[in-house]
Length: 546
Image (cartoon, rainbow, N blue to C red):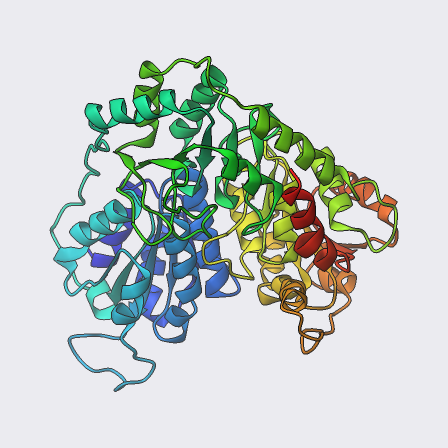
């Protein structure tokens, strides 16, 4: 069998549904092999878009998404997506082409060391140097991408190797179960939790797994322990429930941080060091129980006293067997803080001033989104408002990136979400800066006939950096820009374009777009003028009094 055919057979054996790609001449044998496959080729308009779509596919399914590019500039354009998947814990396999490695074809034209380039950004990277290596290298790339902690892997497939022939069979994925925590560690953690007075559950990115979410909800419902989530832990616990306190959208000084400070023991589930720390440990502070797939990465602000290492869902199940609600537990402070936070979140949520305030936008969008509707956030000022104010009701319904925190990923991520979940309502939320970094993928969304709404929150500036600039007491400088007419821009791609001219138009417009189907871009002027006052000063002052 030709090596490129063998490669596609190996992908089929791994259950691959899509390859997101911009092929080059070095991929043409792969392309021809793919032509007769059940795997669907999705051609994007930039390699970065292909990578973001593959990573989000992995995030939502737990199976590696696959993306492909040519050598040289095609491969370098995948670098940001590789970092996005690697830092975000999203399983993804990248395949890049290369010139012939057994004979020179064009000297050094377009040739760079892609494997070395990918090494710091991936869990595994390899050049396939012979057709017989295809099955083993594909299996290893998928195995490493999927296992905890998930991430990006890379295979370089030179064009002369793709044309070789091999008699090697494809390899079956192995049966594998994650190790479970040792019973003595579980018992030690249970004793510490039972002995505490004010335990608090903190849910991070690593807990965002289907079975883990199920076990966490059972754990919380039984024990009534208050819950705080990180940005990438949103949705693991139903955030409309009575035990959810809040999200650590801000780095510090928010109401939710007071809830963390009042706890005497923190059950830290799925902590991932790529996220901004939701709390800093200090000598004499709350005891910390670390529950994760891997042992803690210790640093000056994180040195947990007890570690329960193994499959998180199983660890929670074991803990549940050892724990009952304790009469001496007191959650009064946590729930008092929750009430104060919810009251503050409501402030500004009914404002009718225009441009629309972020609090009103978040509230109105929540009201039109179904329980399992998906919002995919690009990176920008709005991400803080959505993380803090938008209650996620189910896992993976708020797709945000608090790891690489890259601009340009919102639209491709929403497109992948719609492919994976075609029956769910999906909305991409982008700033005007982030949207323009991959706006060309609107053509891909139209070509795929997706039902998708793209909100462009327009402030004609890099709003988050403006907020930081104000926080550091610098003058407003260097962060403003111009924009195209987004309505006409949408129409030029065959999408539908709309512009909000009054705050009360926003909610009816979203409902109208949902009913209409197709790809809709909605230009939403947003008022960020209160960011500095509210996020840098007001929240700190109010929370400090609790």
